[in-house]
Image 1 (cartoon, rainbow, N blue to C red):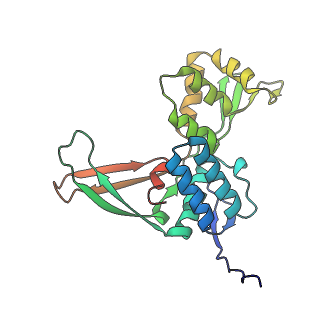
Image 2: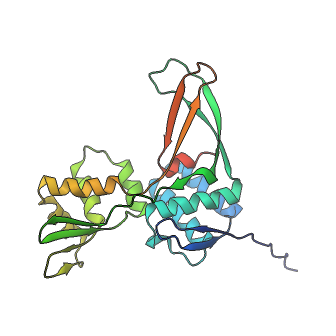
Image 3: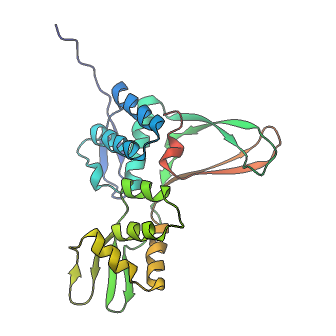
Length: 237
């Protein structure tokens, strides 16, 4: 005789970039096991695939491949909160220049973590009177891999910028059909001032981030900790 089916709790949240409501459920023990394995492996591609899989399986009528990086990160921590608890317990410590070695326990409530969408930059960037580009939000795979590369590697930076250009336009046409190699070549030939405009837009893309301010119980010094990447929220996954 087959075992009885379990009831699955369902919850609602909003996709930050669109404001659309989405229904989701917690991840299962099997999916949590896969997540923990991916984290322990330190394999970046495996971790990215695992996060995509969890968002796809746990969110209804959502394709993670069509979401911005900050959308996926936000949905993931919401799923994580309903799966293993809304509070993440971890330890904070001073920077390397502080002689105090005290590790202070801190409880972070996931519901306090937001994506700031109040100052979204226009994706259309005019480079010249008759030339411009339309940018798109980086995907989770793109932004995660970009965060892992050296800022001293101009080739990879140019490739990343090229990957988030949706189209190039002038007064006569919109150019949206091109290969990544073709766009890399086009970006490589931009004047530095134009390239810096694209970089500036990328630095202002919405992010999943949270600021923690605390006073050390040992030395009484005030500290500020910035959580800026999804890996910061992976603690105690």
